[in-house]
Image (cartoon, each protein chain N blue to C red):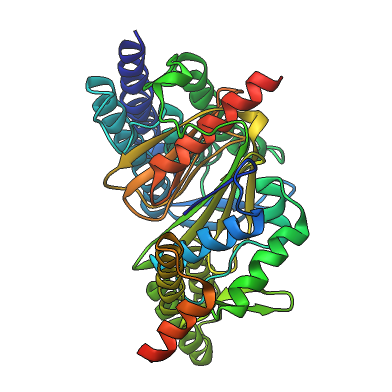
Length: 336
Length: 115
């Protein structure tokens, strides 16, 4: 049932939606091509008067490119979802709950929605005018341009969240997962972590490159590279501690920021073995209900939370970590 | 690494913590330059008194496994793994000597003669 819903949503949001959006973004300007001036207004002041223009092929081409990038993300999302629905037990990297791909879906819908909205807005604002200077847009016209794609992404993610909760191991009992066998007189602390071999050197190269660019005057590019390099550095390693208190995850060489998940929030833990595409911080516990912290492929700890959310983090010896957490969860439930 | 302490064992809690951390350092589970968890964090995680953890860390420092730095906590020394392996071998030697009925002065004499 879950697999069928997954396929249906995958085709709807990853296939039909980008086709419809691309059709609108391309079809409407083509239909009114002869009614548009050779240069069209593409930027407006607060009173709705145009203050920027481009050749219509360029302006509408950029909007269409945005749709294509968004559609690519949606098609990728659809492919992963279909792979998952065919074989949920082995279809890594999306063996984790379907929600972990919600970020990709939201990005795809927002980009393709924004491209379509821009294309339609430019076409309608420049329709039947002699030159771009006489085009007019409602001063509040920017609101649907922003709200439309956001609403589209929210609806898409909402559909996925409502219809597909999780795939593998949903409904399994705690006894099905690894256990350590702690006695009542024992206390334990599990410390582990994982390291990405290429992220730290890459970030250092990036920082050096940014310094050179800064000296050469490319300040904006240098700042961008510094931001990306620091992001790489943050995901170059991760340290995890689990005990009767809960699970604590520290990121990067400075062990900051810290994610704390109290034991009372955890339903169970299980070890996984994640494969390709497993790098980066994906999802969000608060927004999408799933977050995955991947610094390398291989052993990963998955925490099922009591509020149906899921947290994944790559760690060495995930089996021991999961076993300890499950023991502590059972001990706590016995006490309460 | 898994640190597991049992309140019903005869070995004191600080000794259990120290020996398990020694074992982890000897096996390379905690690498040189790594920081051990803060005493407060470890005490809270395994539900023991803060002074018990500080006592265990002092044992590791005296054995040359870690360096206790203000605000940085306990950091494993570069020579830590070798010292930890030696410490484990000494522990095995002491246990073997006890098992065979040797007294402490007799064992020390044996070591001195071998040296």
